[in-house]
Amino acid sequence: MAVVVGFIPTDVGYRALDAARAEAEQRGGPLVVVNVLRDGVETDPRHAGDQDIDIAREHLRGAGVRVAFRQEHTDDDIADVLLRVVEEERAELLVLGVRRHHDLARHLLGLTVQKLLLGAPSEVLVV
Image 1 (cartoon, helix red, strand yellow):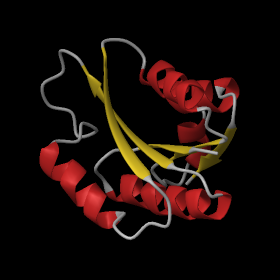
Image 2 (cartoon, rainbow, N blue to C red):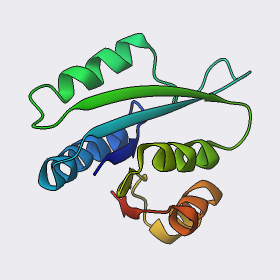
Image 3 (cartoon, rainbow, N blue to C red):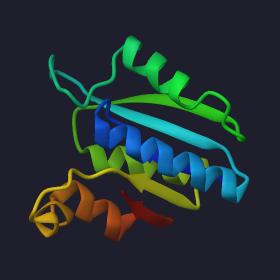
C-alpha cells in the first residue's frame, strides 16, 4: 500500500522524506511525495521549485520502492489537497513533518495538522 508524504523543501521536509521512505520500504508500497503550491502566492518557502524537486529525487535515489512526485495547486486548504491525494492513492499512511519547538503541542494543534490528523482515512505519522 502507498505511503504519502507532504513535502516542503526544509530540514523538516527532508526528515519527513526519510521517515516516509523507511515506511514505504517496510510496507512494500510506493512512496508518493506531494508538494502543495498555493495559487496566487508568489514566494512561500513551502513551495518546491524544480531544483528542490531534483534535490528531493536525489535524496530518495536508491529507494527500494517506486517513488512518484506530485505538485498540486490550490487556492484553498493545503490539508484538503493532502487528504484528496491520500484517498486517490489509497494510501495506508500519511507522513507529515512538523517543526520542533519547545511547545510542540502548539504545532500539533495547528489547523492544517489537526485537520490531517482527524480527517485522514489512513494512519498518520508525524515526524
